[in-house]
Every structure is written in C-alpha cells, then in structure tokens.
Amino acid sequence: MQSKPRLTWRETLLLVPKLLVAFPAVFTANNLRVIAIAIIWRLDIRVAIRCMLIRTAFKVLTPRDLQFILPTTRQRYDSFIKKQQRQLRNTKYEQLAIHDVEVLPTEKPSSLLWLGNRKTADKVVLFLHGGGFIIPTSSHHIPWAWDCYVKAPFEAGYNVACAAFQYTLSPEAKYPGQLEQTVVALKHIFSQGFKPSDVIIGGDSAGANLSIQLMLLLYRGNEFLPDWKLDEPLLGIFQVSTVLSMIEDNFPSCRTNTASDMIAPNLVHTFMLDLLTPEHYIEYKDGRTTDGLPLDAGFEDCRDLDSVVSNMYINYGEYEYAASHSVELARLLAINSPRMNVTVREDPKGPHDAILLEYMVHGKPGPSAKAMKEWTQSLWKAS
Image 1 (cartoon, helix red, strand yellow):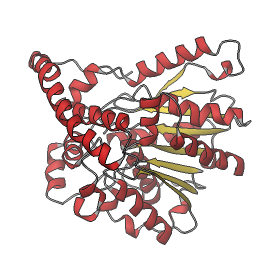
Image 2: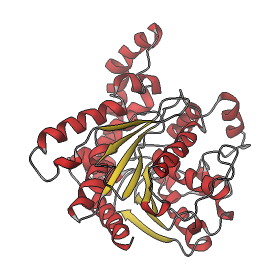
Image 3: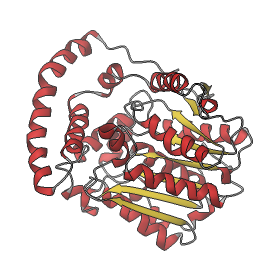
C-alpha cells in the first residue's frame, strides 16, 4: 500500500506559512478575478471558485505537501466501501459493496481497488484517476466510478466491475513508471479470464493521458512491452479532459481558456518537472523528447487504431485549457482510424474535468455523468 511521504523538518516548517499566508492570499486573488470572469461569461460561479481552489493548491503546495495533507487513494477507497456497506445493507446493492484489493507485482506500490464483484462480473472498467500524476484520487472519483461503471450497469442487468487503479505518484515514480504499472494492471485483468472485448479503460486529465499512452503502447510496442499484441481490440477507452501536448501555440484553447480553468500552462510544466527525471526534463524543455505527450509525438502517423480500441468517448469542457487537445484527437481519429466509433461531447461552458466537478459542487451525477453512463451502457448492450 502506498504510504504518505514523510516531510523533512524544512518541508514541515515551510508548510505552515504556505497554508496560513500564501494559500489564502493566492486563493483570494484568484477568486476576485474568476468571479468577475464568471459573471461576464455567465459561468457557474460555484464551479469557477472550486477550480480556483484546485489551481491554488497546485500553485502554492508541492506534490509532497499535497500527498502529506490528502488521504491516500487506498484510504479513500476503504472509507467509501465501509460507507457503502453500511448504507446498502439489506438492499439489492449490498452484493456490490465488497472490499477487494489486489496488490500488483510492481517495483513501486500499485494495486487494483475493486468496486463491484469481479468474481461474478463479465465486463470490467479499468479506471485511471487524474491529478497531474501528483495527487491521489479525490473523494469524488470513486463515487463517479461507482455510479457510472458499477451501479448503472447493475440496474440495467449487466455484471460489471470497476478496478480503480492506485498507481505510484510522482515525484516518487518517474516516467514511464505509471505507464509500466498500467500495463501490469491490464495484464492482471486479462489473467482473470477477461478478454480485451470485455474491457473499457479510461480516466480524467492525467488518467486520460495515461489511457492514450497505453493505447499507443499497445499499437506500437516498446522495450517493456515486446511482442505483446492483443488478439482483439479493447471494447473502449474514455477520455475526460485529456492533456496531450505542451506546444501551446498549436492549440487555441491553451491561449484563450487559462483565466478561469483549474490548470494553466505553468502548472502543466510543473507537473512535467515532477514526472520526468532531471535529464529527461532538460530534453523535454529543449524539444528533444515528447514522451507522455502523444500529440507532440507523431500521433498523426498512427493509422487504424481501431485494431487496438473499438470505441472511444471524448469529453471536454468548452472553456477548459486543453479543449483543443480533445478536438484535435477526435479529428485525427476520424481521418486515420475511421472504423473506430468515436463519440465526442463538449460540456457547454464547462471547465477542465467537468464530470468530476459535478460531484464536487453538487454531490451527485450531472449532465456529464449521465452522458458517460449512456455511452458505457450502449457498449454493454452492443457487446
């Protein structure tokens, strides 16, 4: 189980003024700006303020600070399952509230945290949480996964389990550590008798990026996945607010949608600094590597990706920083992989990760989550 980092005395000492002085000051300044923007653009002010809370946390606190403060992914999972077991006792959903953790044989800690009953399921969703590769799953990721990929299919008569993936966070794990762990997770799912056509993979933000990296890895292969080819395509991949490039000049939204969104170019560069080794980061800054950034790494040359994935769902917010990444991804798939069934949903006036913010702000599924359910239900029905 991945544990919290132990802060040094210097990190502990610096954390106090960050929380008491820097965080309130930056959050206040961000809110003054974003509230005015929200009024002018007619955005949901509650969502805009929540975006600024997240943006401030990323700006003021280090990854180790955040990992020290926040519950781990495993702690979030344990708490959720305990709550579900209590609330669902003596209901038809009780059989789904099973505490089931599989520790994977990876060099650094990773595990599958199961929602639903994998032993009776005939379909699986591998869920990759977002957070810039630096923060654990939030308290809202797991309810989203439960509602869309366990409860909704159960109500429709399908046996689906969801494996929420706990990967090692950066800076402890450097690229391609999380990708290597995801390969192990997928192989482990296949070892339990599930076929590629039984599996949907996806996530939000960094998790969406990771699922696209996995798709390209299955398509191209590399040194840690030699000679491993799927004998049939994966059933599907879902992308929520994926970030696939660092070349802002190529994508209009990276220039126009930074004022009100939770992420901005400087923050994404910071995430890359934590994700890459120092040598790798220098290559990245000099433009000599595009690892982890599919739209900068020859994605336009990838043809017939439907040999790896049959269906894709692309969801992004109209006003999010990386909206143009999703638009370009959909465009390239339509040209180069026309046999892949691609569904695109833009959330009107939506920010980065709108589906997650529905749970954060309203505490329940909204239009984005409902659209996600409809897409996955259509795949269960067709398969």
